[in-house]
Image (tube, rainbow, N blue to C red; front, side):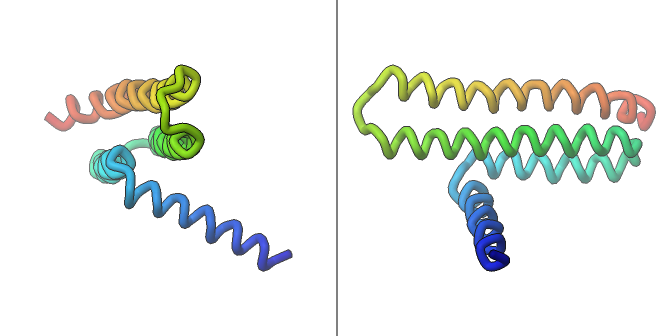
Length: 119
């Protein structure tokens, strides 16, 4: 049983690695996440703000990984244009866009007061 659990963690880590290595948008999200975390340290934001930032990063990256999984599955199921397949892929991509847009808003709400105060 322990071996099975460790294997499941290994496979999950392989999935994360695959997403970051092979998906352009994951690289962008990862770079932005590093930048935002660095800015959070620089501006010494509150613990609550850190948690909000971390949850927001997790949501965007988690949705991007889900989008990647959905796209891979749909692409493996059909090579022909299929309206339902296109809808599944578009909705998954839309979920990422929606979360990323709100992440930008959350970032602005948190960081703009610090930036204004700093200048």
